[in-house]
Length: 120
Image 1 (cartoon, one colour):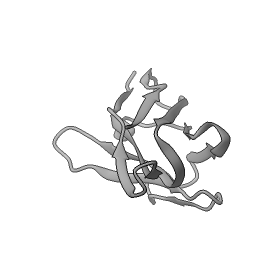
Image 2 (cartoon, helix red, strand yellow):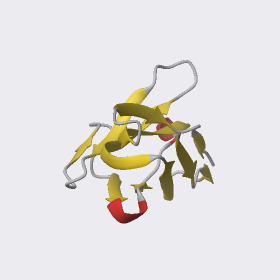
Image 3 (cartoon, helix red, strand yellow):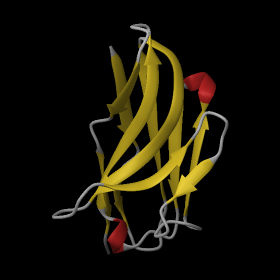
Image 4 (cartoon, helix red, strand yellow):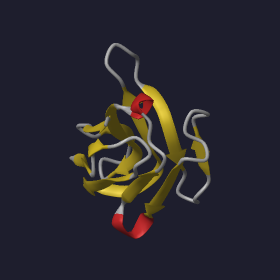
């Protein structure tokens, strides 16, 4: 059994910052890509950023230069530092990871989501 647990969401004013964390736990052998997605009300879930185990990262154009994804492989944890937040960043943010488990197979896992609200 694998779990992804997110933390760090909340309410922030425009121009502010938040840092999201997501820790993977359970029957894990190794983790390949980890990432963050978001879903705003009435919209489809979209990619925010991903990072491979070696550290190479990919960002959505809408967050480039404002958000930074990082990971701590020893802790099976991925982070998303979000700066210069705007109301358009308001969404539920979901953690995602591609994990090789002790069942000797790859699986794609999602966290439960954490709400980020940018409002004055």
